[in-house]
Image (cartoon, rainbow, N blue to C red; front, side, top):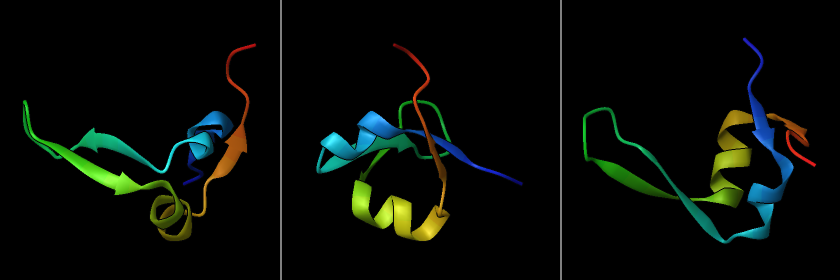
Length: 46
């Protein structure tokens, strides 16, 4: 299944993603995220 990622996310050293339950956030390095998911980078908003 393709994974799409907003390209501007790479402007940040890390982001927070849902950890699987309400209120549980996980900080993930954007470099690690791209390495693990190999997403298609897109521009979703102009």
